[in-house]
Image (cartoon, rainbow, N blue to C red; front, side):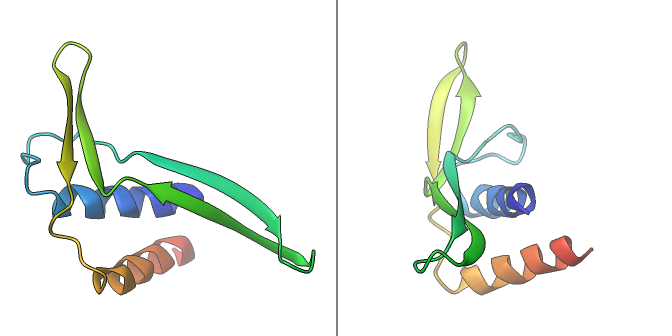
Length: 91
């Protein structure tokens, strides 16, 4: 499920970053995910905590790295991302 979430997030961040040319498909989000297996009362509650950059990074050592901010992504888009992820997980 984490891999599906990160792919959906990557696509959304690429689409929302106006500085990323359509030809640049190697742009990657920077993200850190930490699994947690329990809730506050030590009950079973597996989930992930994810921190991500607000944009994507493209390039490599030879071409230099470049950060593209996701200026086109708004809070209301979170619902669309959740629906997309839910459909992919169920599929």
